[in-house]
Length: 67
Image (tube, rainbow, N blue to C red; front, side):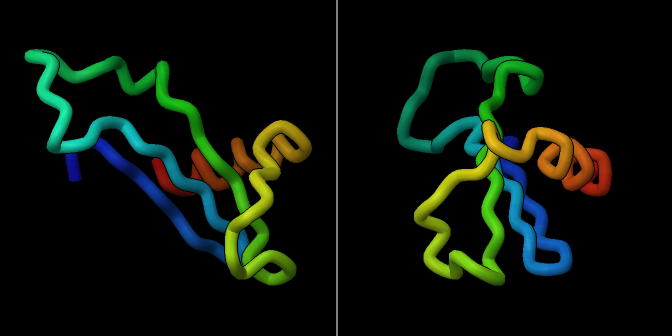
């Protein structure tokens, strides 16, 4: 919805907020500029610790799986 994306696979979650409906700018931002978050819900079910910078390869794997 509005370009927001997310994927769950084997206890790992990757999500990005592309746009929100209550902010109207006239044009959508580029998908390549989205910032992804990455969580291991097996050990952090609250998704309090973003692991995107610590595990960029795993995040990339989930992004490819999503695509």
